[in-house]
Length: 345
Image (cartoon, rainbow, N blue to C red):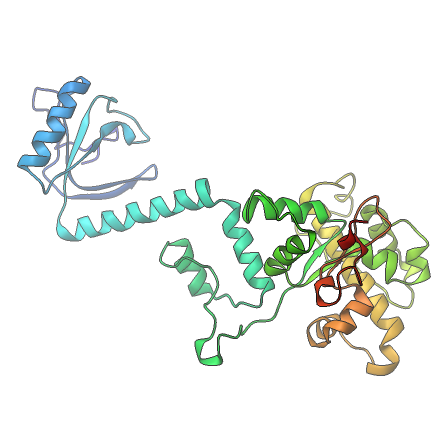
């Protein structure tokens, strides 16, 4: 049975030397710790004797598993004790699977960290597909990438749609992602840096640019600060032709939005609302007569890139304290033709 001290003992019997064991197979979960097989906790001893015990037992009984005995969350065993475990073949396989999964989760959390999220976002932006089964395999450590591999039968062409990244004055945010998830040192050449950004995020919209360069006079005549833009696009009196109602936030009342600017989640929410509202205004003013009531989703995913660049500023990024706008696609023409910053201005 499993004792109150978290150890495994045989009917509360003790061998008189401080060691206690169990004659039955145990497979239980106690406080998050899995107790597997038949185990014996050896008496406390110094580091020299522990080393001798490890070497002797491993040499004489290679089928046994030895580990520190103080790793149980409920305590009970001292740091200078050894737990000896005997497992059946099925229990060994189960233990190896659990250890491998624990190591993978530790790798994800401690080493990869946000990089795995960055890779998933980049895959979505590049048109890769995701399935529930594939994500479960990734979290279990059975595959390296969370997205489904390219369709080999289709010539390696991605089968999903490219999901755009929407930012508001987010140049420094993009640089932060590149230096922390791509390489700590960015390329020396400005054009090479833009190529790196587009490799991960081929479709970017900056609501700072969308509001100041591609919107109507009502929007361009006001402030382009995120909080003030959000207030304007949510004002029913200023949006009679294209009304916009922000999506509700779960577990938050009408007064929960106050004084939350510059918090990551709230800024992301405001950016999404501003992007959706401004895009609808642009579509309504420029394309309603041609295409009728075209939806935002249809416009973003079914329009040519040149139309999206002309209408919404696709892949153009605001640069603080500069007269010029960064154009991530300027490499398609002569240097400096679309992006004066290429010539060092």
